[in-house]
Image (cartoon, rainbow over all chains, first blue to last red; front, side, top):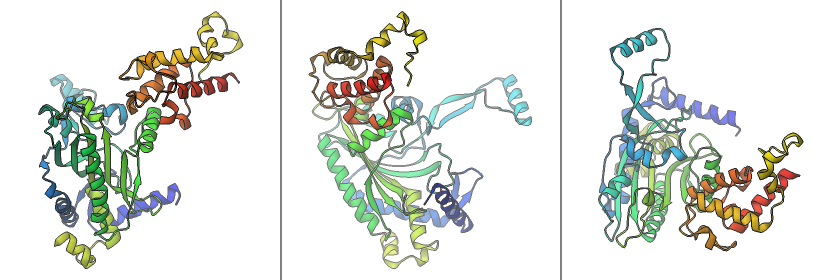
Length: 308
Length: 109
């Protein structure tokens, strides 16, 4: 499938989803409302994740889809993904500036020059608020920590592809501990992820992957990430067989976040971290693609996995 | 290539760059050690590393690798092509020397 074919396949599926009422367009590519049925699938899948991961006893944390700008700056996200970041700006001028803003707005000119950065940045991945939070508690206990998060995330990458939204939800489990604890966690979830998604009757594959790092430095980081097999993705075809969509990801950060936030293990070493992320919208889109738009007519085994 | 070795300006002002056209192995290695000390963020002193020592074992991280690449490009006035932007290129001082030597030879040819 060439580039034009793959874009038209994405556009066609987006249009089908909109026509079926599952996605509600807003006029911005990658920004959609969701119907009740779409949300029900997301909720049932969220519950399924808990069925597989809940017994591990993760500490639940729920953050709004934004984080402290200071944490964002410390995360070095801007080194790797400046093109994806979304910072929140607000008006901070006086009355004169306000009049100027309104005049510019009326004249169809750029009205944003008096907008200034607030202390809040959009969450780029659900786990970002977790690392500084864990760091602030001091050295890890012997058993390390396991955290459960669920958040809308923002990435500035407008696309016609319904599976590449600008605002989407990510459920994650995050393991913080010794290299052994963290690697064991990732191995467990690679196995569980395959079994869990297999139970949903969708074709899938797991493959080595890389993040979309920016620029030439990014090429190097991507190559290193692949060489070291730090990231795996569980792929399901949605609009293309040749380029299936990453629906789950399994990431080993080594001691990157441990160093950044000075997270120490019980024996004083630098903590390692890993996370498994579930792309909620992508999983829903894959299920709708493979089982149809009417959940009442999904295969009985899939319905029983999701609805019990 | 960013090198600027036209006959017109190949004089004294460019002496620093010209000197790299055929540096000895020892000179290259010393320069690489200097860049490592500035940009590598290693846990050990680069002067204590043998040319074949594994830099990742010595504490070179992925992000450290990026800083090292940029530092080498500035020092030797070269640009690493995409096919060299991987861990193997920067795994030891000797590997870096070979890569830089290849780029310098390529630029001089």
